[in-house]
Length: 143
Length: 146
Image (cartoon, each protein chain N blue to C red):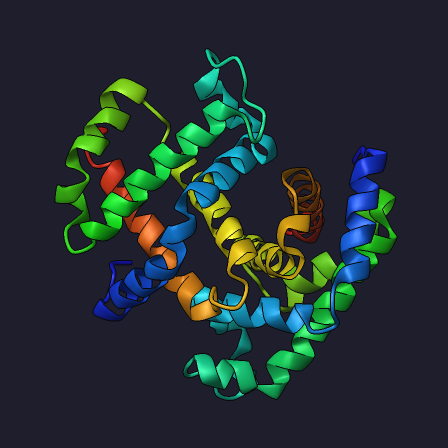
């Protein structure tokens, strides 16, 4: 389900509103994912503190949102723009791509939570498609 | 049988107490817009041609209330959802022929409606309890398919 011009403009406009809270969104979504989908903690077994609100969780939330920001910036060529991130996830992190969907879900919950009026069904659809395309681009180098 | 902690029971009852009557309508509207292929089950509902049509469709609104009432049954029978939902499961399988994957899509839309309504009060632990509840409801709805 590739992104139409309308999807892209909706995503960019919404990101314009949401990006000021990027750190908060990232920390919330990542922390939630670890709580609501405990199997995702397996990727962070070496971390001493996985509790929501911990410094490590906040920092990683920022890292994730940096990736999302890059994706928005490369929305016209996600595969090209996210190539090195894809290599990272494929060869070094080896995150099962099923987890991209899980993180996307938690990002969407947090966006609805923080922006109840702006996260309309139309915006939800465009953002959902965007995250799907980001996940696809991130999985590009896996095999 | 599903094991619910006291905290989980409280979370579900609290959320239910806070949900507005329009929550079912909001979730269904969101589902039909975000996952447009779900419209296949509503060909008798009149115009679903765009988001505006879906949002103003009276049959969608009415059906949203039906769905919410169904969810209420599960809230009131948390220790017995599978048995409570057996006739509903047969209905969705034998009469409505709904692909059970759609339950997950509507369930996710309900989660978004709840999150938007509760804001920060929808904590990670409460989200976990709610999503567990939704998963149990979905499993019960799919149980009688064969």
